[in-house]
Image 1 (tube, one colour):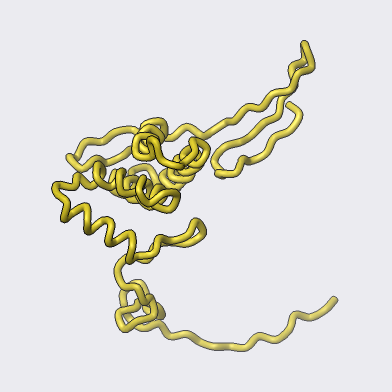
Image 2 (cartoon, rainbow, N blue to C red):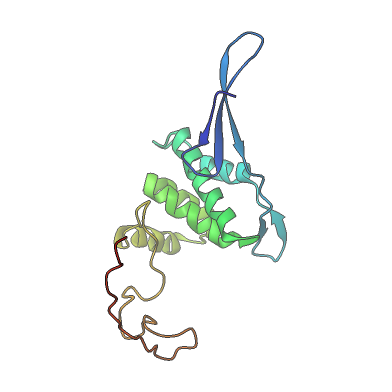
Length: 181
């Protein structure tokens, strides 16, 4: 092995290797095996399959201006988020991440994905998805989506409350400088 480092998505290790026989170099990627269980809408449990996720993303973005590299990167970022979420994840969480990611790459691909994922029954439901895409800005790659109250400091905010919902008493003490040796 010549070199080893984490790849961009953060959940794979990229290794540069060299053949001892011929001296040629090649790259391998090692990913952690996922033991995440997906809880489906009908109550079934299924092992998370990142290839199934990538297949769904590719079907939604078929004949759209989205590259396979973009779809693979999106799939890897969703898979990493699923692994971080814990041993069991609801399918709706994965679908929401996929829909948001596709909409950020190409809104039409996001709508195509939503039409199947949300099982849209008529044009009114499709229209509401399109309206939501137009009105609600999607979070950037480095931002979290705000769920519920759009003002986290509003009157219903839990900032400054203990886990039991009672106000916290915070003692403000000023500390001196550390002594220099």
